[in-house]
Amino acid sequence: MILEIVSPEATLFKGEVTSVTLPGEVGSFQILNNHAPIVSLLKHGVVKIQAPAIKLDKEVVDKFTKVNDQTYLLEINSGTVEMKDNKVIVLAD
Image (cartoon, rainbow, N blue to C red; front, side):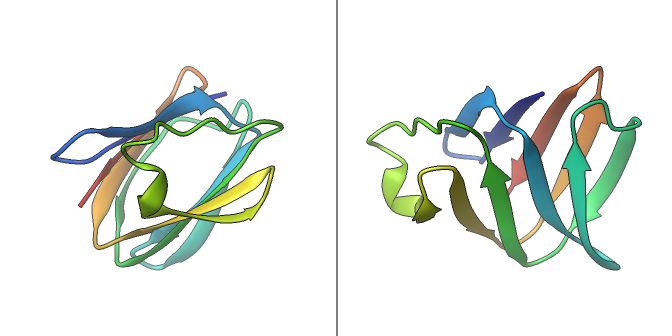
């Protein structure tokens, strides 16, 4: 699936991922390939991105924490997420 993370300043990430874990209003949840359509509010917490290969632009790499070559973390204050047609869009503050 395609994941796109957008902040007010810039697009932080866009690429193919295997899963994304998000801090929902009522708890953390994970989105996998071919997940049902969903729209949800996000609270302060960590977005966990997992993919076979993650490429980050040098302008935004300092916003992410590298766990390993396949896993990166991004702290957000709040936001929204939409999953539709195997594309996840996260609007994050």
